[in-house]
Image (cartoon, rainbow, N blue to C red; front, side, top):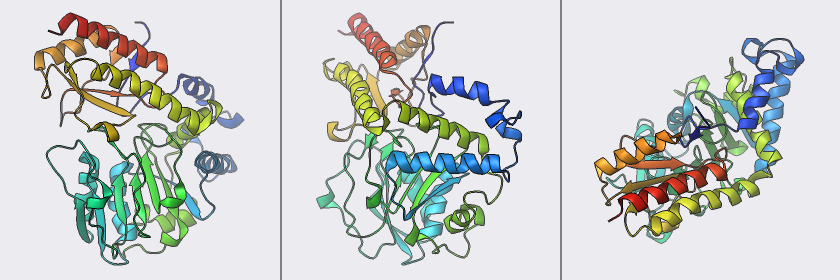
Length: 365
């Protein structure tokens, strides 16, 4: 079949070196002679893994000591409810900046539990983030919510908003561990692992301790950060295999040079694709404003700003013939989307770039 180049947006590619480690551990985890999937979560063996993964998260992101690190279930969408259930009680209101499909879904969910102020409202087209000087933030809000990188639309915050002391909550599902961030500027950071730091099944939540003990009475225990923090993320049987995979991926990031190296590669990989788009005289079209273009998810159209259906189908067919897979854009927006997460190598992105050049030469008028 030949080497597969997987540009899927999630579940996404895992580092090949991690597969090699998991193969050895799959049936003999930590010398136990059994798999992690049949190991009790109440054993010293699992307690050791639980701490090990927390430690690598804390060290990689330089997480301050007054933040708890949680491993939860329910996916990113579970935290669409988890955030307001845990935080909105203080004032009953929250600010949401909607910059794409996922923050729009989060805002819609939050309305079930309190008043939501749409600082940036939902729209039919997400292509930019207005300057903060135009935002109307509520100083009485319980929190301000953003999605730092919109996987579907390819919009990424280029800086951390100043929320004037109101806790900032960030869904980082698709750019977690792709660069350094100052954790102390956030009240809560969370993300599903299956895009950039592991496989589906676990959500990583980093929450400042002073934001605990505020959950609404109706908050289910499984979503209550305080309850889970007290249980050290072992309230019930956790998604142990997904936590193992996440830990091995994060250890791989450390081995490869840490977050500075991931950021350097992210810039190189995304620039390869964006440069071709810019030099194509409109044959390839990236809808997102340059200042907020994602380095993780690159959506584009072919032939025109709205896309040429026949050309895009031919592009995808030709890509698959070269083992360049999962490039079809999300069903909500269409077109093409290349996800260049940490595990996607520079060489793989260069292969895609070469194909884009050849396709342009063949079809551009």
